[in-house]
Length: 69
Image (cartoon, rainbow, N blue to C red; front, side):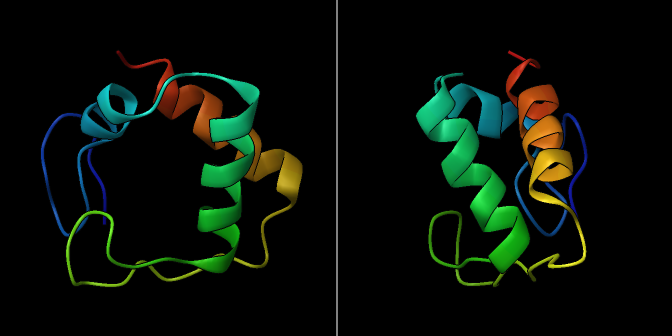
């Protein structure tokens, strides 16, 4: 659904990194979106949640994404 540097279904990870400052508040918020899913920030197509991930793994993913600036 995502690629590092190009829009696929969802935004490119580099675009996410440009939009959000790399801080604890955003890491927690984006990790929660990974776990629960979301819609409306990047368009009408909903992002499916990934409830089988641990919160720690979701936060590690966000930290990687936000490092791509």
